[in-house]
Length: 187
Length: 182
Picture (cartoon, each protein chain N blue to C red):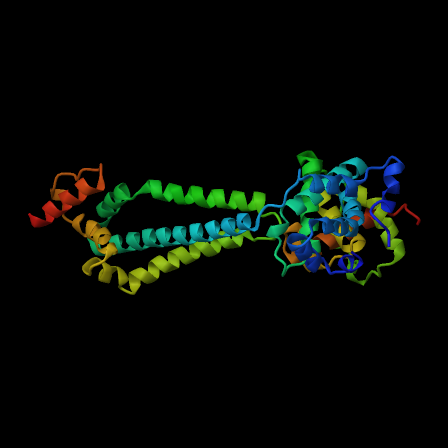
């Protein structure tokens, strides 16, 4: 069996010995194996990031459809009003996150082939589909009437129906904003 | 150690990860020559190829825990070698043009061409003149004897594109290598 020493004749002839150079770095600890948790946490972060992004984006699509449907007449005005109130920072954050994730995957997850175009198309399609399903199945109506965390969200949109006649709600701070909305309802 | 050296790639990786990192030596011994050959075909420079291969082994070791044992190790390490070769080449090397008129409707049945030693020898001599996008799949297919699926994994292109590029590369080769008599 050839040993590590006997194979190094190429080195003696002045040729570069990659085997020795790499193994020296491995043995000296200059090159260390990244721990498994590094890859596991990277994968988990990517997974949860994508799922969160999907939920946020699906609800944005759903709210868009919901708002257009409930406003009926004057939909143009309502649409513009709604656009003005949409949390655009969230949309920008989502786009930034996806761009960053793709960049990181391309840079660090170099080993496996991924069809990023297909992933992007599938993601956007499923977001639109999920938003549409929530809207047509009546889930948003249930949420807007019933109790639960989504109620507040949808009620804000309902209230916007007659907010035209009201003074503009304060835009700074959700507590102040909710107080204003409650007062408007009581009136 | 002899037994370790005879382990299949994926089991050897598991051994290096969990038992003895010194066994990485066997991975280097297995892949040094083929990766050098591949990197040399891409870079057309022995020193650059050696740089790329050394960096490949270092990067592979560093990321060994990220290797999915259910996948094929050779595709994984070739992919790293491919990336490192591209890094060494720099961007200017990726966009070499070939001023050859290519008649794609020549009626030649490329698939019918028998691949012989003669063809392999011609490939060696002409490969350096081919644009990189054709050189990559051609060298992987004929010289490294990789399947279309493996090439697709290594180059991150669809299997159909692999076939198209190889066919076009063969047409280029036909034009380029007419004067060569092996």
